[in-house]
Image (cartoon, rainbow, N blue to C red; front, side, top):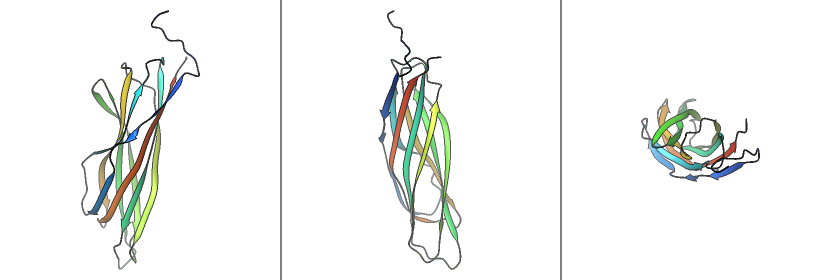
Length: 167
C-alpha cells in the first residue's frame, strides 16, 4: 500500500545534536535568571510509526573559587536546566532538573568539576514529522554566603534514539 509504514522492530534512528552555547561567568554575586540554550537537536520520524524518542543529555559543570574563609563556610549554587520540545511552533517544557553543587570555603583555591546528565523518554511525539529538542540553563541561584568566583558550563551534548512502537 502507498503511504503506509511497515512496522519492523529494528526500525530505529540515532540523532546527534550540537552544543549551542557555553556559560562562562565570573564574580557571581547575585542570582541570574537569563535563560541560555546549551544544546539543540532536530529529530525526524518520517518513516517510523508511533515513535518513541529517548533523549540523552550531558554537560560539565565547573565551579572555581579562591576565597578564603575564617570558618567552615560552605557556599554553593543551584542550576536549573529545562528540556524543551518545539513542534509546529509550539514549545513545551518536558522536564525541569535542579542541580545543586556545594563548595567548601577555607584556605582558598577550590575547584569542583563534575558532570551532569539525564535521560528522558518522550512517547508523546507530535503530529508533525519532526521536532526540535533543546536544553536550556534557565536560572543560577547562589546559596549562602552568596558568591562564586567562576562558573563554567561546557561540553554539552544531546543525542536521541528514536524507535518505532509496533504494538
